[in-house]
Amino acid sequence: MVGYLAKTLCLVAALVALSPSLYALSPQIEDLERRAKTDGEAAYALGEHYIREGDNSKAFHWFKKGYELGDKQAARGVGYIYDEIYHDYPNAIKWYEIAHKMGDYEAAYDLGILYEDIRKDYPKAIKWYEIAHNKIKNKDAAYALGKLYDDILKDYPNAIKWYEIAHKINNKSAAYALGKLYDDIFKDYPTAIKWYEIAHNANKDDKAAYALGLLYDDILKDYPNAIKWYEIAHKINNKSAAYALGKLYDDILKDYPNAIKWY
Image (cartoon, rainbow, N blue to C red; front, side):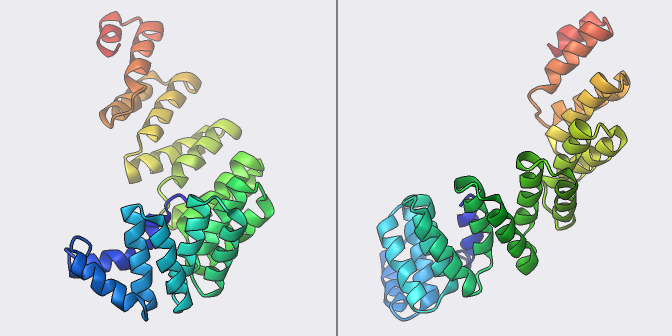
């Protein structure tokens, strides 16, 4: 699933930290292969190495071996191969569930994504996202629940609930999502401003700064604040802010030198 490798390379990263040349030198790989025949963690690490190398067949072999030696992350690795490489979703589900039963609760998040994006089975997606959140406080699972309730099910009270949970456990996208929901759906502009500002202050989120500019410009007609937030958005590389400033100076303020500058 999206973000899978970033979340499952922990063991590999630890090994590399101990020996930066581990994966660069074939003798070390050979040594890892010898250990992987009896050590599930080594087999999992070897599978991750071959994923990085683009050798999916060897990755699959070593993930399967790691599972046979009792490594839960290796079981999830098998699920990943079936999911992302072979697009064999029944087997992906089977192996993610095996990994989950072995105690790899990140697999619950992968199951949520698969049921949401591939199967469009939203009740099961909710079930697995909630398991991922409840077991390990997975911040991406909480945010995914918010997005599912918001974008797909249009259940806005539950969307707010899960976005707020995601924000509390440091998901960086949740504050902006809350701002958009209060802005676009509820037309509660003070609360939208609150969440956009939280998103900007916490993450230097250019989308939040630009959204504040738009809100002050188009809705509240507070042009000094619109200019302030468009300029902030521009400084953090928002691609739309300069044009919006030009339009504001051109169409509203009739300040043509500044319009030309920003255009």
